[in-house]
Image 1 (cartoon, helix red, strand yellow):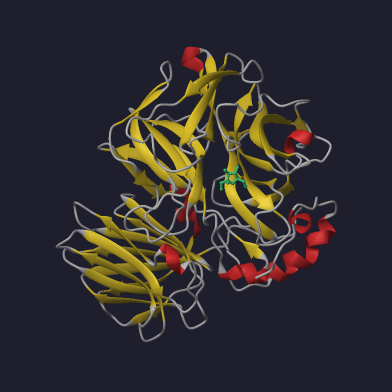
Image 2 (cartoon, rainbow, N blue to C red; image 1 turned 180 degrees about the horizontal axis):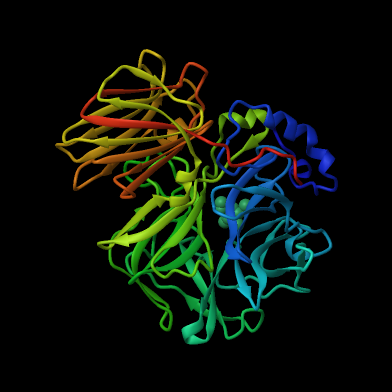
Length: 494
Ligand code: FRU
């Protein structure tokens, strides 16, 4: 693995041609995705500024151009008309030496439309001469030419009652209250994570610190709470965040999890009253920093995208000097006080030829490198292998144990294993049993949706050429397989 110097990681990108060769190398990889957003070169992490604006979905993501390293972060911009086909627009927000507030990175944030203009709230990652971090909450607008116009100064600087870890502003508009909130992930001086709240009557100025969000029962959960958001869905609110450095039962030694809790948000008193447990959003392996779109004009759902990757982790494509992609968009609803995550309905458009219909253990079936697989199951146990060899050996096993009502996804059978200490198996409890799986496999990822959104397991996966088969080993199952049409172009737009 490459040893990066600080100067190499934090170099400013001055000419796209500086990364042309990196792009060409990435684009030649067998693991380039075909229907998931991915970086032109280098590393991508959190989705940012996800919003519906002027009849298009705008999405940005954290991007370091130089390789598979968390160095200088930019906001890279992609757009879509349907949340299915994406277009690369190139770099949007750039860190600037002269705009000292974000001299060492434009970190995560969110978007709001005001009077037909698009505004972006982000964390300016300033480092001073001694390399001490000072996080600023900054604002930029999308100008008429589609380029960013940064505010002359930040909206506010770091709050003295918290450590340097204060970032990832999520803007929440409350038209019924005539005000706006910005919630930020933070960390108390005793190192416990939390969320801090700012309020203003106007979205572009006048922000005042209102205090810390109380979340009874979760006062001592991990260090900084990264990427917080509060979404109103139907009758409930959903608080999502990523508490740093916590180990959770059944999740190996992984210390990075994107969690959520359903409850009611009291904005006047700044209390989020949970009405259930803290759960992980995605039962799988590689999913973090989920962001929900603003301005979707539907109170009964949210649309979520997440980074298909984890902090402090390495992936087989690191050697090819690129890393990360986004998950597919997911529609969130609440059913009987439970969060339901379905693949965005429009994704059905990507289905091309239906290749096979298979009943039970009819042998091994080759799956195309971009495919959707739908399996309707009967009662009882199910055992299957995905990405197995042509004999049905190896790969990812998906097993459902009807006695325990437990589904387990285990990736230890893959030839290219990674992040092994994070644990290679994940399970989920299905109180009503298993009835359906919808699986989206791209060249280096798999997303397994269970029972029409009751649970989802997401994993990066790096199959060798032999590992492209699926086999139902036992159980009652009817399986349909489709080829999926490409919906992202691997073009060099910077
Ligand atoms: C989460 C995170 C954010 C931060 C960004 C920097 O993955 O650490 O808290 O804003 O990534 O890239």
